[in-house]
Length: 272
Image (cartoon, rainbow, N blue to C red; front, side, top):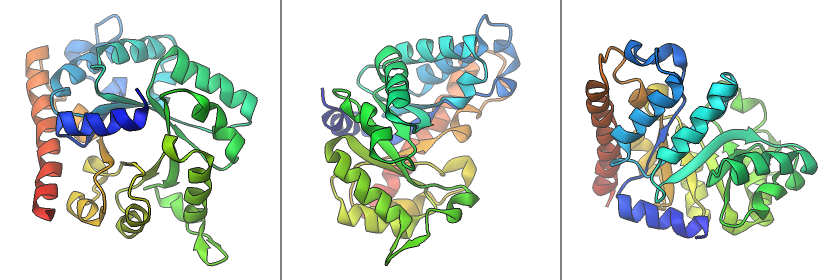
């Protein structure tokens, strides 16, 4: 199934715009899991089991798994196997290199590991994204506006009468409109409003809510379409640091995910 079709279907069937970020830091895993053969995999599998009823997908920040090397990539495979097939998966890898190198990244993340989609740095231009875009039924999330303080270094630079982020969006859409979405940090509500008004069929991946203190209400009110997902990581997956067993952990983490989903849906209802 084409990702764009799966994306819309998943949002509709799950009644959720919540993506749970599996940014798993082994130092923050509850003590009772640390004796597992692969604590990261054990942690992720319990998070998925606890949250899959409330989420439309999962985003794995690859840095947390590359750091663990062997056990990290085993945890990725285990986590992807645990995620229901109807939910979306995002490799938050932020790759972007010359085409022959990017082809290897595409083989690794989209072919071998089987992620639905991947985040991509656009700075090197079209050929750095082309191998990802060539994959059938896969999708690319281009970084447009990020939430970090360094975003102002480049993303808002004026190019003629436009900020650089707008040029990035225009160029990336021309590479393959049907396989391209964008990452917009939740703090950029003015830009989110403009983006979703001008491109009503282009999905957004929105980080920056939860532990990063972005305003969910302002973000929802800025949106002019419903083709979006909001990523929340730490506020959900680390909701039960002192849990003493799997059942206690799942109950607390599941409740945090349900609350996050319901808050999003609540603001959408008010907006209507």
